[in-house]
Image 1 (spheres, rainbow, N blue to C red):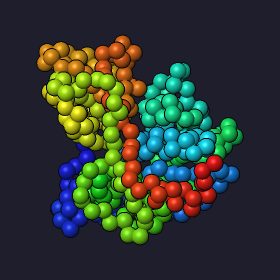
Image 2 (image 1 turned 135 degrees about the horizontal axis):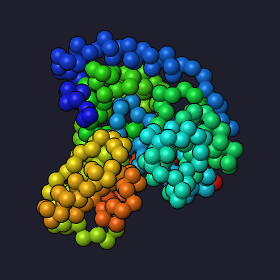
Image 3 (image 1 turned 90 degrees about the vertical axis):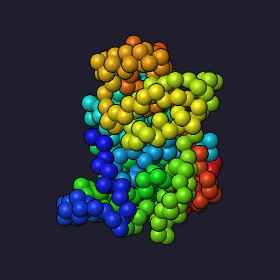
Length: 325
């Protein structure tokens, strides 16, 4: 289901539904606050958590890719630990992109495994222990900001620049897993992704900005009619990226986040694309879930995170005991 529109009303005008659901939001926030107070496993290497206060996609996966590449370039050996959402394996298991499928390990870990060693584990502490034992000099926790099972040395909160914190209400009254104040008290750095002049009040927490830029692949997108589909947190961002590249989006199919790309669904999209003379195109994350016989038929648009204020990121890393080698 798409997020309710009232979640993104102005905080001072949340609407009747948000007000009626606020008592449930208070209970949800209280449960989160109680959970995060628990002590977790302390790794022998620095742990960086890439999380969010919002539910849904804010750009955590591109951030994990960026940090993995950034740390490798600075002489470190990062390993990523993920819960493996949508996968059947409980782990801890090191993801092998040549062996595993998305329905086993989840789509995000399958994508991330192309950049650095990646582990899935329903028990994040067990995953962190496995990564540490396999030689990780730094552990990147993909999500888990509200999960206390592993102690973190650096908490990075990723926020969508356009949506911000929405109406600033907690589920189900709004899009938050906990209150903004509670989340920011544990945050060491806020990363705002996207082109938006909308101010984001993060109190005294250092903030950096960034954007997702498509990688040049040599594909002549200008004027190309495409049928785009995306099962990410905010599919409209992907469709907007295609339009900015010059593609003509004949139809944008917004799927559920992590939605299985069944043969029936793909056949429907292929038939529609053929009738409209359009090329099928999707995101990197969705591409790993494609049925094998559809992989040659669908173009993929890879995007990478570019950040401003790298000196602020370097300071946060140094504060966490992470230095260039």
